[in-house]
Image (cartoon, rainbow, N blue to C red; front, side, top):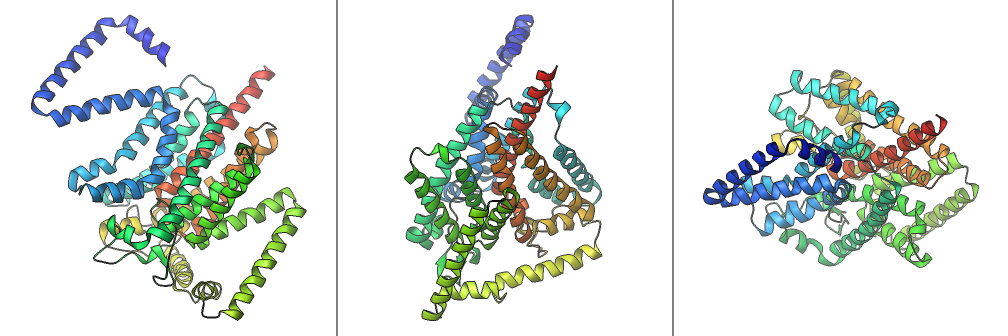
Length: 480
């Protein structure tokens, strides 16, 4: 990239000089009449330069930024500075601008490389899925409403393409993983402090309240216990995040200098996962462990899991007998027996979803179904599953394409980590099992439209596919 710019500069010196003089004159006029606009323009130019110079750094910052945005920017910053209207929209759109810049920068790395010859199968299903959504944007929906739904559905996929296209070596990826583990550990500590010490007072003081009330999603058993959510939008999203961080920590325990640091990390993460009370995240991690045991044929691990499950069941039984009025015990019993309103809601939502899809097999278009659409339109279609949400919008064909995309990712990663014998295989395998956690959560949550969930798993997926394709190119070149 730098050599290309230097070459173009030598060949077009006067063109660059003219652009420089023109830009300087524009900045002079703006500074005289619109100082804030000129400052914004200068910052924008500097941001573009930095993104193009350090694309991977901004990919990492963007991934972490999406995790921090819901609380630090969307709530605390907007509330403390009383931002409203256009100003608030500009501040809140920082991540979208940065995502587009990183994506554009990645296209420069994609040129003149052999990656297009080895494009993994998941991209073909994804491109078909994107094409279908684009078609629905014009033929099936109110365009403005559909455009909003299109953004929620498809914007996170930009980071998948960016992570795949960028020229990245394995050392940078492993530095990213180390930074991710540190970040997730600090976030877990914050989640426990916020839920158990700062409590609801912190939420009210930072813009979470609505007419003196807090969303019931932040609590279990009425308002008895506040659920841990870190800086993410809701506890369920944070639960999926913690599940992914636990998987990566298990695969890269070598990053920890001492065993006690590793066990402290896992302990804190497990406690924060429990305090999310996200049953979908719990189930996702359990399914991940079960599939791991079945695929890898780990008999000792299977016996250990059976032992832990037995001890846990006995402990729960003792708690039930000795303290039958315990709120948490009652909560778990109602969950298992489907007496809990949330569990019952999932079941009813699935029944309603099947009936709705049967009556609308080609879908109703973008920006109409789901909680994101409800916040904008005031109308609400009860969709508590990402798979049903996609079927609501894009019909049965859209759902099949998305399922094929998911399954093809798992298939490619399963093949990849068994073929690659180097350290990269650990990363690809960890992303494989992380996808299982996310895929299970899709059954119970509309997290397909939650950017902080999508950005993380798609970034990891793009990096893993990047490594795998680079390995295939290396093998192909060695054969020639």
